[in-house]
Image: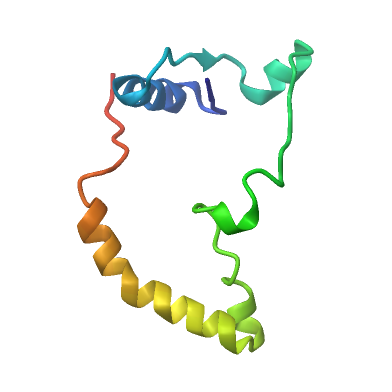
Length: 99
């Protein structure tokens, strides 16, 4: 399911996701607000996955500005490892094209 405030962008995202998804991709017209207004189930799972398994959140980002030395070192490690990550996954991506 694709939830988008801008339905045109949602349609573009859905088209790209449909190329790689294992199942059908649908756009929820009206976004999250419409979903909730229709009394559809909505679940928040802030503990899933556990913090040590998350790949889409940088925990040290704000601490590095507060003088946290380990957070600063983590940031520098991330910066120096980034070129290798980009080289490894350089062909992976998300493409938006006008319909």
